[in-house]
Image 1 (cartoon, rainbow, N blue to C red):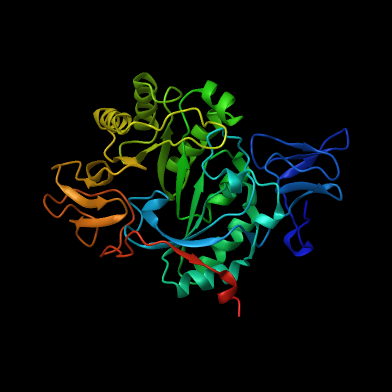
Image 2: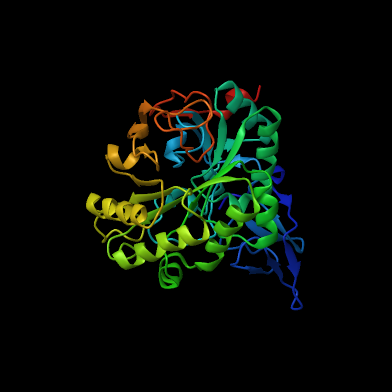
Length: 365
């Protein structure tokens, strides 16, 4: 195994010493208890010299400019490009992980790009990106690095977006979201059984994060659930999930139901039928959710945004290409004047479906 350059190792503050001489990491509810030289399950937080350190500060597994709808975020600066990157490791163990080569990496060599916060901000600005996304793996585990990047981006007028499973402790969560402008939170299922057996984590802390975002912050957030045949796609579970969202978060939080494809340790499962996604969207709308979407399938109806009052199309989408735009500059329906929830520019972006890999060293000069 390679070892990280010492410049990538930084101290952290969310941990404490135990009576038996070990240290406990307090960033997420996994509460890894570490002896000297051990790493947490996330791989990137470790015990060195009697304290918990982050070992991957300023290192990335790669950068790419994506459409923001790919995060997915449909109500945050639609049509704009977003500079996306991740590191290595993850604090969950999802058997179906579709970025497992990054999230389950145990090789620091995965972190090919040196990526200091001010260089990321500079690259995003020069590339015309309205925002930067912490994605591919969970920014919860590179908490300190993500916050520094977000601050550097804010200094040049670029927004910060977290794509996360929401598995986070209370104190670091409050600090983390002080610096985020938007988030997409994976609500992986709506049973503790699924979370325990399939992700090696718990449901309740994720629900706590969602309620915190709604009640305690101004962060715009959307929710994604990957529907896996026979695991979390029953009508009963979808009824309960959407009813909970309606009751605790309200009608304006967008829900994305995405199609599973066989990957990592779930190769025996079939892909999600499009009809399952359509059913989930129908249940959500029936239960009062105003903005419900299908993902990972070609479904123009399921990918478009509609006015909750008059039912007309507000934002038409064909995959990641915008086909219609019927919002006023202040985010109202052009037909009936009802507000559409979200964060909108006066005019949408026109990035489309382009994907642009980026070498960050080109911006470090």
